[in-house]
Length: 191
Image (cartoon, rainbow, N blue to C red; front, side):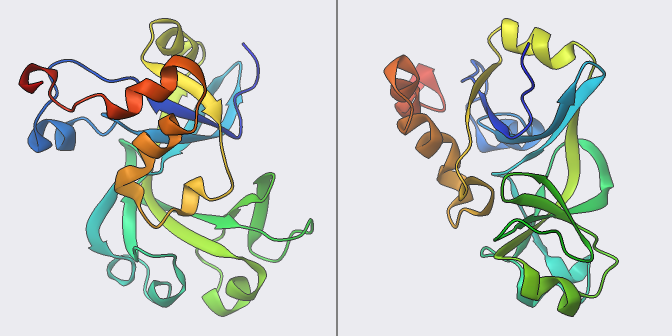
């Protein structure tokens, strides 16, 4: 399989997950995952559309006023929920102190760096608790089973102002049959 770094994984609709309580248990229900790294040893990424009911300052004092709206911590995935990752949008082509470019205009920020050093160098910041991870071959198997659709990312996906609408909006911009899944009901039995 080609390197998926910088691409989006869109969760395929799942039967039997119809209530909000079910979705809270399954972080991947209708999720959009930005793949940060992918190779033969595995992959990891961040779920982009799961804001938590926690202010950034409750976990990382001093960062709240610098993050994109909504100014909340996002659940990046089910792995290592006690760690925080800062995703940034980087204008230009150079790296700065406290920032590591991953691909394109996307980088990771060193959250131990003072915000005032980092903030002037970025165009957007979002903080995630945890991440999504797959061992070697696991993600490829899930894609082959139809659990994920792989699509191109757009610059604004990771910093959308409407994270709850991201799953449907990414599907709507696709061509062919994927576009129709954007209107797939959360509970098909009620259709």
